[in-house]
Length: 299
Image (tube, rainbow, N blue to C red):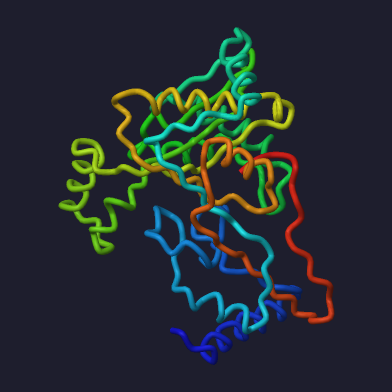
């Protein structure tokens, strides 16, 4: 409800509980677990939400900020269309073409049911994300579970892995926005809606939006052209006549991550939505600092 008194009662209740557990601040809105889903307060770009991204009314921002929350960091959603394939920057393009042509590098689409991709994902993820606060290494089993959960909606043309002399060095993982289908189900997923889901996704191909989930290159190969090569390889899939998707949204790019913001620009994206992660310090005299820039790793 758009009621500051009610909002402050909720915030105060959380504050008292957290202080009782010896914490010094509270952040929000956040979702327990990884940051890739339902995280942040939408403050700009009140467009149709995509699968696993939060939506709220515009007045939420005022409720947070009137209470005293401050902007800890922004997270951006970039959007582009597939109708006009934007050329990479000439320098990036030349380097990417050289890498794609090199016998030392290999780029390939994911193969459903091949467990090796889960292992490769774990290797890249653990190396590329090690510098980020709030992330932890994942095991082979966790990676396998994640990959298995994606398989029912996976379009192999949207998931790309890069290798250097057989060693996994980067990936670009995207999924169809199944929210375009499930929004019609009113929260119900009974047998009839499961059938509708399958027909709309696999037969009628009624999803025309792609969600960019995660992009990463291990530190040793960053800024060497692998990022551009992954993007160029993806653009080769876009240009095929069977590729019917129309728009692409690259979600959850923190403003503390200029490398990934640059990558989003390379693929022709522009900021479409802005979510804010707020922080409230219990000691009002403490110095407030925004999230530090990260130069290693990617989204």
